[in-house]
Image (cartoon, rainbow, N blue to C red; front, side, top):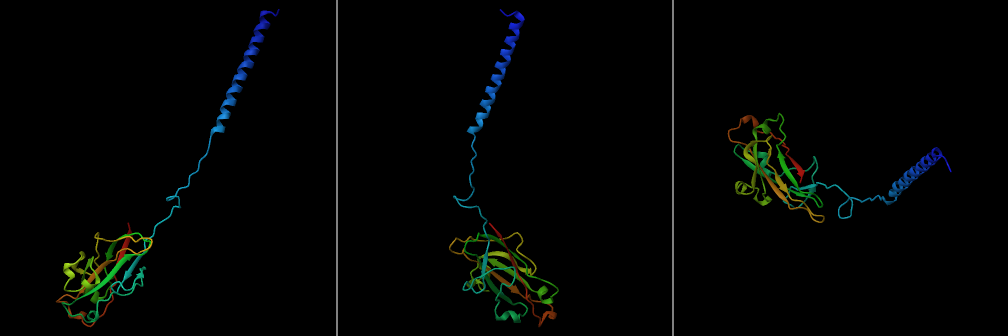
Length: 214
């Protein structure tokens, strides 16, 4: 029969083995959890398609909607103020129409009108103008100007004046058709009482439209 001391040593060894076995058991249990993990990837898009960016593409017409061209930063043709525009007499006003629309596939836009380019030109400094939006080309004339559309630039404004915070909306297009056209009518005047020094001069003001997609 073993002595009490030997018996105590054997119990400690058994306890040590039992503890190690318990630790090993816990280790196997933790490792097995990894087999129940799963990674899932989901593509992002629009109705199962890809992500993409929209575009803003404005077209303009200077002949009442017969011909449309893509608007660029420059080289967009000239507004037609009529034959009298080159022979203004103090008190005369001439009118010109431009139509704007969103091209096929384009978003709509809020559009502001910047003033005409004004340098040191004497005649440019003497001229004034007004602009109205929502005006069809046929109504861009003296007899109807004041009663159609909405004011974009007030009458009597210097050419360098723009529409400020006032903007007009160009409706969005669809994937197969352009947006609804919006007309802007400009009325340029040589005021009564201008100095005779502007007589016989010519000038070419340039207006700019700033469109922001919506």
